[in-house]
Image (cartoon, rainbow, N blue to C red):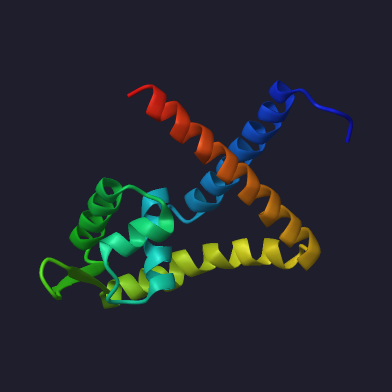
Length: 151
């Protein structure tokens, strides 16, 4: 690849991120699943029933307020129930309706993601992850410095 200016690199990255976002939007809308609901439900699938909102925030990078409002929505729709654990923790469990929703909507979306990844050779996947990790770490570092200067 020829030498690219910083502006060109930024346009490439932002374009790719927007494209991925657009693809996810299409995928989620095909099952009528809101993004927050998908992220929280797939996090419950990853963490297992009995997980905490704090754990969902940590693995999903969603802020606690977004997780909390999504949990309340899922609870209102009777997809999950909260059970008291060691104070102040409330553990999250799927209801039968929630398990059915997971099976019919969330798992098929994850399967589409998995099929796309299965087509990528391991060495290409490793390069992608390594490069993306480097970009995220650099970006985070510069955002932190920027935020510190602008307090």
